[in-house]
Image 1 (cartoon, helix red, strand yellow):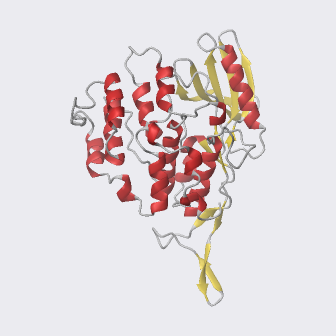
Image 2 (tube, rainbow, N blue to C red):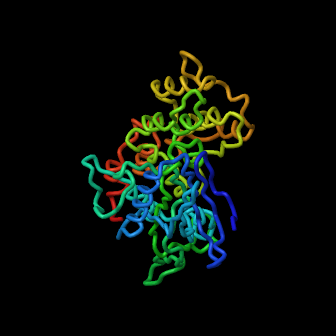
Image 3 (cartoon, rainbow, N blue to C red):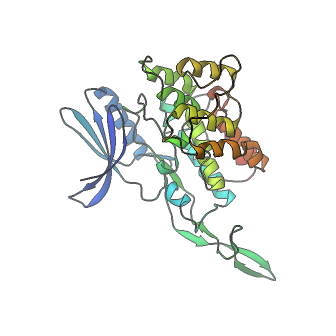
Length: 363
């Protein structure tokens, strides 16, 4: 029984279903065999089984089974029990302590990180996606599973050898509750049928180059090849990690939703500029080839947002740039390294992990 279509594309669907035999909820990915090569699907399944059984891996596959019919291939996954999205919606444990933000961000990076020499950073047994030339392209709070969602009450020293229950800095009437364990896993359903599709990723976590590529005019037949060029050594995933890190810090997304806007690419471009500053010249020129009416010719300025919603126009006018919002410089430097507008300007994840935000204290 199908509860919900989570995502659908040209050659696939991801469904939330009820297994009527076991009466459990499952996630099923359905791939069209007429559009996607069987060899690619088989390769995906082998990798998913590999990370499923990898000890100490930060990336996780909950693949339970797969089967095929004449026209489709079905991959059955366990449903994540609690995701980071559930955590962010739980006001009892928000805001997260800085140590948990650091630990969670570290684990997300480790789940995909690849060192320049082709070896994994620190955790050699982790089956990192980028090591296998795989892009996740849908890193968001909903795809990050919290391993142990139970909480504890946090105490602080009150002097004279006594301790008291710690209260939140937002409301001094609320007792601070924290996760017992900050362990998380990045869930992955494989990239077969997804990477070349228009519906890549989740709106508020898409990198600029992904936005430009997936909404490219139909004259670009091979979107996948354009995407590979702009992904620039897998750094589209870096941007998504930065968006998740921001949400851990602030409890709200970095960008306003834009999917309901009439001109999606224009809306996203204005939102990116408002938060992250001006686009580099080379990126403007490349985007202008694919999308007319976004940048003004020669000047490089954006066209006026007259056709965008009032809510988005307020966001564009009122939002503070990133550098004015984050006061801690170590935190800002990581956010800046992950969310630079051009993928070529984003630091490799191995370099991000060597920044003081991660190295100043033990994780």
